[in-house]
Image (cartoon, rainbow, N blue to C red; front, side, top):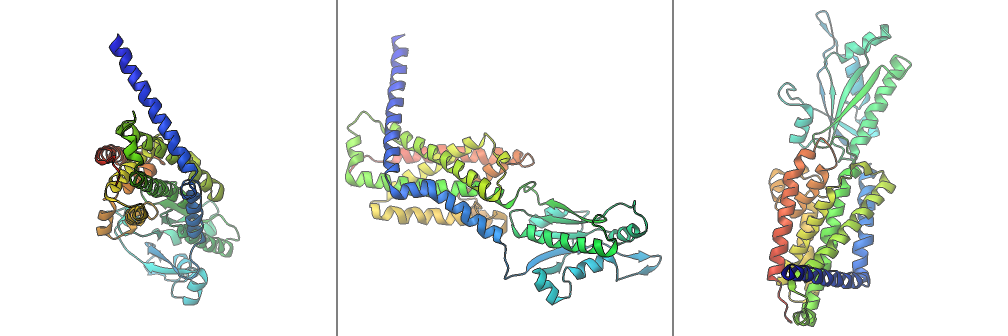
Length: 403
């Protein structure tokens, strides 16, 4: 009985030391201007910056709209080129450079066998942001509507990847042209419509929903690693960690204290980023899943472990920033956190999967939709494994000595 009591006493004492040193770390962090910036201001600046950049669209370059016209307008044995499908393409700037520039649109004809591959899958394989398909029989359906008010609505199909904000602008252009045709042909706005569908794994997402998880993890990796590498290097250089070796605080408790603060900071960053995205750009808060907390904790553990590993090789405080940024910046742009990884060339997509940020960001995005939730477990499992391995290795190789 006394052994059991002694065991719980040791646990309670360790918890007190961990919480105490975490409080000390938090106070040191709060007193540091750069740390406060990267923890509280940096995520807000990042989400506003990328939100406004990608919501602004591109006025100086034409959007390339890939289209496939499956429609053949035929009466008896006669084929007609002057049909509603041709009118639609003409109004979208087909073979009309002046109109194309006005619409900011460049049409490009494509063809693939829809019986072998779906339009959405074809787009994903070829990194196509948006695709217009005029289905077979569309012109006949439009003309039938002129003489039959109860005829079915004639719809074209628009497929898009919502991670491209320009996809909404392209959809607006198509929709406005269709409404113009409605008014010209029928004097009403109902007979010709556009049906939309997103590419696989993007269903129900807007561009801001895609960026928020990535910005959260970019901020955690940048702020967490820069702060921890600098702190550990400075403490070792000044001899503080050497002095800690003579206190009751054990090295694993010291490492766990830093991890606890990194996890707390990660949750704060996630809340700030999500709220900013919601207020400024309408981020869908309903996509937040409770399991995201697990990804944030183990993501913080991953970067804490990596920071401890990098600290082992950094000997001077002045070099801490440069070494950290040399690791952080490549994964920021290559790991698919800010830009979809599938936009990269195939060999770079392979490189993206080397970075821990790729799996953490993907696990967060997978949790946002029911249609992609089945993909969560592999990415989350890798995230958990990385967190445990990197943290154990980082804690083990950390030396409490004065340089």
